[in-house]
Length: 266
Image (cartoon, rainbow, N blue to C red; front, side, top):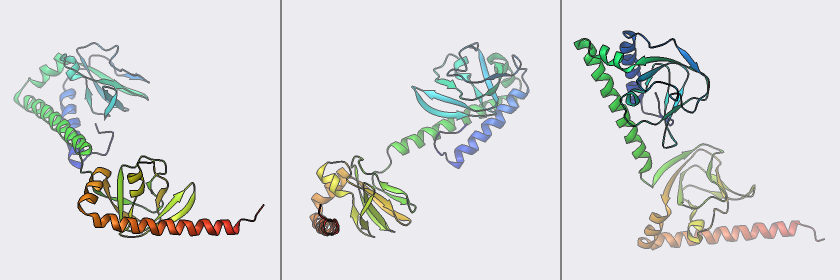
């Protein structure tokens, strides 16, 4: 099992432990039927008895909850235990062939309680499951409520700002260099310690140009609300921005003049 996004090393270790504990449990239980293959399905449990769990031996199963992709399951993962106990559960689907083995819930529970060692393994499996989903929930919250200001890194040729996007952040180039591109034409350069992306924030218009890293870059991104608050408390920043904008306008005017001079009259 693994998240649709990158997961931590701790979560990968927990997933490996879950697979090994599941193998120990299922190795002592007779399958309810012969292994079977599901080629493509939006709900692999649609025709499965409610008291059965499914072990994946080949392929990948996607797990959705409220139409949101939550998890990928793979060989060694056991699916459907909550369903077999009438607990709420999302939907399992697959886009390619998946080989599955069905086990009866009662047979698994009986094996789990057959001796002290099996009981401990069963308890450990459930605790690892809880720990894995706890880590998943924490990672999801961290991504949703991450600090709005942060350091971002871009490789040469990567896009920092897309022309036409909504302006929701202001950037400061800390290291490297970048080019401003409007309709495929380079209209300016951005150098270290320069603030960019502020004009669209002030005018509340879409981004007028893209910003493409011309070398490896490190930038500081600040949400527009926090940037405006910063301007209110540090007006000298606004003066610096006005100077930079005036210089860029002057540069663009000169470029426009050169284009007009180079264009023959018709």
